[in-house]
Amino acid sequence: MTLRVKNIACVHVLNSYRSYNVDRAKITAIATEICRRLGVAHYEVCLQFLSPRAMRTLNHKFREKDKSTDVLSFPQYDFKRPLKVHAAPPALIPVLNPLPLGDVVISIADAASNARDAGQLLDREVCFLVIHGILHLVGHDHMKAVEKKLMFTEQKKLMRIFAGSKSKAAAWSECAVPALKKAKTSKKAKTSKTSKRRA
Image (cartoon, rainbow, N blue to C red; front, side, top):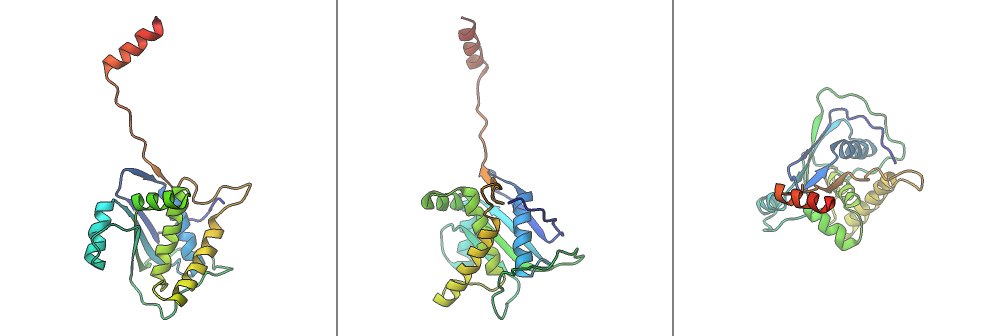
């Protein structure tokens, strides 16, 4: 699935963890479409990708858990009822002064660990965590069985929207990949390889 969603200046994506490359345009398009489907595209959402160390600090400060975690959400509003995915979402319109919906922070290293454990690709896991995080911003939770059932139902709906088809790649395709480390080669090593080729 190729998203053709314009960012209406309501979604901001920042990657602070250089061990992974994040396609900010794809993440922005996914997050914008999630907000559109939930009827909150006129709100501002900030998404940030952090190192496990930074995530551990936040988790300890706000949840008193001294360990890293995959995703944290910081909502700015209390919704009376969790918002549901619209089958026919409203069209996007430019917003001059969007109200803040909240922040979602993701540890991409923890996402990679989740993906390995589940036997799936990192980019799919990142898309899932973006969905999960934004659902928390609009009133969803999974502490109680009833809440969990509703939240997981909405997650599945959104994941299906981005899943693509046989002819089209998933919207999350390569939205997050490990950064390639540049190989360090000395002049001596290069010379010896050249000598062998000539011989």
